[in-house]
Length: 376
Image 1 (cartoon, rainbow, N blue to C red):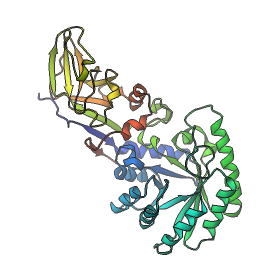
Image 2: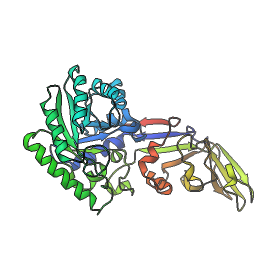
Image 3: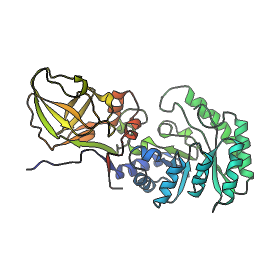
Image 4: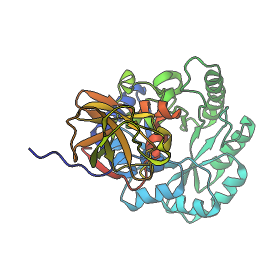
């Protein structure tokens, strides 16, 4: 029987898993609460548009991106519904966001004044969410009184709509820390003050980790990114949080070669055979997003078995040690992230080897990797 042939580098994305993950996260939010699915950075490398559609089918009512251009791309591809642009905007980007009918984030009266002329010619009032920096130390004002002044400036505008107030947690993925409760308490005080005069405002703060960790952080809406793709925000096994990984990264065995003791694989001869063995060559490398730091520091599945990645990861190829005896043959599928047979390599395992986070791994998959979206 001929062996199955797969693409040289493909990320298979299970959109049904995205949908189910969103349904799971939505079920954690109290009645009346909303789920905002974060699809920035091309859906964390999974594909923004198909994942956005799957998220909406899974119960998300809002979508969030980081850049105005991301919102415009979603609109250009026919996506409707509420979109929040969370990042900083240049004057030109304000125009792009407003034209895309996206909500924007403000934290200074100067920005509100800059936004007004664009809102004057918009087809509908521009939704504005005011950001208080409670301890992330990035965007947003740290001064609650300044944030309240921005709230009032937006509320008094005829062409702006005070839609929400928000903050962002710095350590929600570090269970038991002291900073997360302090941020939560600071935001609770701000929300109470704003809602006293603007009861319809949507308060939102929780990322994926906070959504899973602390119901008190849910407020009126949660903003989940990493978890909707089935990646564990705590860096552990997604199954512990009842999440399903949506992405697998696959290639195939292009060549099988006999190595004798002392033979080397890859640039710099960073691995040499210590015994007679067989080596498989996979046509995937850092030009696809397989990080060079995985040199002699990863495993690959072939035929449902784990094999060590050996030698330097190059731009277009990696090599794996198949052992002294092997039944692996050219054209067999290989899995770098995902399940094959009874074995699974989680994205979290790859991230741990790289000493990074799981979603840097998926965001790092480059355009040369074909995305194969299934289900939804």
